[in-house]
Length: 304
Image (cartoon, rainbow, N blue to C red):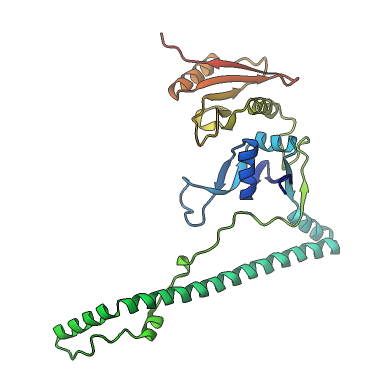
């Protein structure tokens, strides 16, 4: 299983990884970071800490596919179902209907498991509540007797424990408070097909694009030199280049990919140099030729 290809699911050019074990393998074994973009079920209204899926840069996904560590996949079940309805094909229609029935049965099983888990947790919470009341029964009875005495009512036995049936009738355990098992993987689609990253398609439109080819050559060259790379959009670049894992190091470089023999505006060069100086990083102007040779030029702002 260690040598199994990592499935990367594509959605209109976006590469997503849904399995946490695959995410760990991508980072630890292949030095690729990506970015978590999923909302946490318990905290859906924040964006400081995110969960699955892991979104990969096009360059990261292509690198994994090129080194034969992953395979790019696309979902075809919805398209096949629609095609079967349009063409009136009984076999495809029955196949899509069978897939839908399987999904509905899985949803029903999941809901039943949730209900059973809620009932079990309700019983445990009720038992814990009863145990707590029994441990505090003497103090509760004394408090009730004191309040009756203050109101001038007849007091009973101060050591009489609380009624167990009253606890059950008044006990409330909301479903929002129950513990649930958070999935670390997305169920695999029943119908998928491999996407060829060498040819453009609606799910992989990057193939053959000049900008993507240059970015990929730069990305792979820096990756082969041992660097970690992430998206550089927040600093106005293409990549942020780290000497080690971004959890332990700050980025040393901001990589800007340029087209060979393309004229750069002076104001853009000045802006890039000043930005790198302000954030204490060196700006790299990177370019790749058709033969794969990558050239670098560093920019550092020097005051007069």
